[in-house]
Length: 416
Ligand code: HAM
Image 1 (cartoon, rainbow, N blue to C red):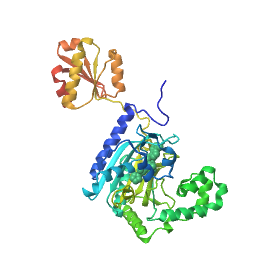
Image 2: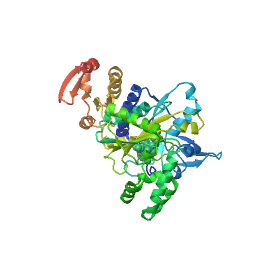
Image 3: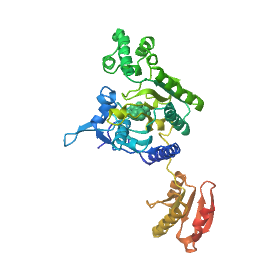
Image 4: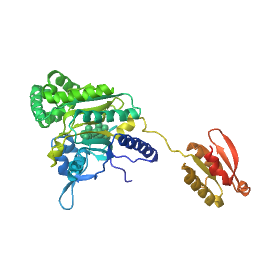
C-alpha cells in the first residue's frame, strides 16, 4: 500500500471544515487591519533561502527539500514565507507604488524536521509582513495582531516573549562574546551542541538541556547590554504601546530566534498546551533583508504562526463537525428526481444545507443518519402522501412533525 510521507497529513472534511472556518476568521480579521493577502509560489530558487534565512541555520543546513531541476537550477520547497514575500516585493518594486505594503498569507511550508506533536514536514503558516515602516508602532501593531488572533480564537493561556537583538553588527559581536563565555564549559556540551556553538552560537540559547540552560544563565552575556541607546529607545517604545494596549509580555534576554535576518525586536507567542514545541508563532524585525536581496533600504517586520499548533491549542484536533440543516428522506427510487429537485430549490431559495441520500438506505437508516448529521429537520418523501400533494416535515430537535403542502415547503422553512 502506498502511504503518505512521514510528517505530512491528509485532511478529511471535518478537519478541512475547521481549517476553513479559521481561515475565514483570519481573512476578516486582517481585512479589518488593512492587510491584503499575498500568494507566492511553493518553490523558489534555493539561493533565496540560503541568502535570507542564513547558511548556518538549521533550516538551510539540514531541513530544506532541495533538488536540481532539469536545467541544472537548484530549487527548494519553501521552508518559510518571509523570504518569498521579500522577493516578490522587490521584484514588483512595490516601494515605488506605495510607501508601506501590508501583507498576510496562509499556506503550506516544508521542513525536513523530526516529526512530533505540533511539528510536521509539511505544515501550514498564517503570517503577516509589514514592509516600509521603521517605527516602533509598526512592531507593536504586528505583535498585537498576533496576540489578538489567539484571543479571538479563545486561547487563554498564552504568553509573549520579547527581546531586542539591536542593529548593525551587534549580533556578531554578541555571538563572539557568547562563544567565548561558554568555551570554558565545552566538556558539558554534546557533539551537536559544540557544532552549534562553533557555527551559530546564538542557537545555543535555545537549548532545552537543563545543564546548558544553567551554564547560560550563570555565564552568558546579556545581549541587551550590547544594544545602542537608539535601539533601546525603540524597544521601550514598543513595550510602552503594548502596555497601553494591555498586552502582557515578558522580556526574555535570551530570545534570539533561529533565522538570520532579524534585528531589533524579536518575539514569540508561547502556549503551555504544546509541550516541547511550545511556540505558537514567532517573528520580528528584518530591516536589512530587502536591501540584502537587492531591493532598496526598506525596513520590515512580521510574524508567522503554525496553523497545526493553533488547532492543537484550540482543542480542535478531533472535532467532529459534519452537519446539515435539512435531510431529505426518500426510499422510493421513483422519487429520486423529485427529492433532488426539492433539495436544489431549498438550497437556492434559502441558502441552507440540504443532504440527499444516494445509498438507497431504508427509511429507518436514513433517519438515523439524519440524526448523526445533526440536521434540524428531516423531510420525508412518500409516494402515498405525495399523491395528496403533501410531505411530512420532522423537527429533529423538538421531535415534532407537520404535514405540509408540497408546494409550501420552501415557505414553511422561511417562517421557521
Ligand atoms: P519560525 O519560527 O521558523 O519563523 O516559524 C513560525 C511558526 O511556524 C512557529 O512558531 C511554529 O508555530 C510554526 N512552525 C515552524 N516549523 C514548524 C513545523 N515543522 N511544524 C509545524 N509548525 C511549524 C518563520 O517562519 C518566520 N518566517 C516568521 C517571520 C515572519 N518573521 C518575520 N516575519
